[in-house]
Length: 184
Image 1 (cartoon, rainbow, N blue to C red):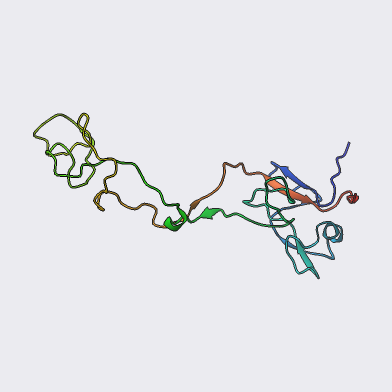
Image 2: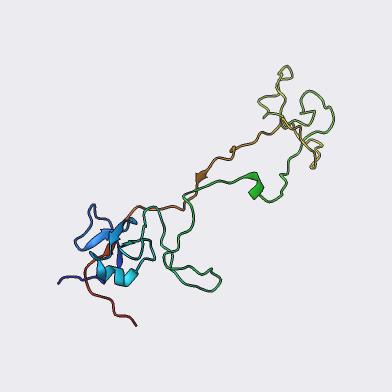
């Protein structure tokens, strides 16, 4: 028994090809005169000049989101695009905050960090070692110490990072020829 789809219906599949009477949802611009039925269903909400051409939805690298409004949600227009594959997070975007860390405020014995620096992890109890241990037993530490500016370096340097939820690549195709959907 043949299965027939509605014109404009988008299907998700795992094929390595586009099924007959379907087109990849890759945002391509197509002719209104060649695909009049599809144009009658979706119009130019995904692009095109609305005179000679229109576009199919581009779902490459995108997550479909239901259009409309729901409780506690923002309204989404049909064809609205949003989000970004990469994000640039700058220090200006971060709220003011503190990191809790302890450090010695005054000169201390050689086996403890002094001059507001963080010590290194203690490797041994060797008193002849030139390494300054980060922790030697229970120390009298100040929880509100300002560290020497050389103790911590910046990280990231305002570079973009990938900003996607876990995903699985599948093919989205739109039906070009089939049953014309009845409007309710």
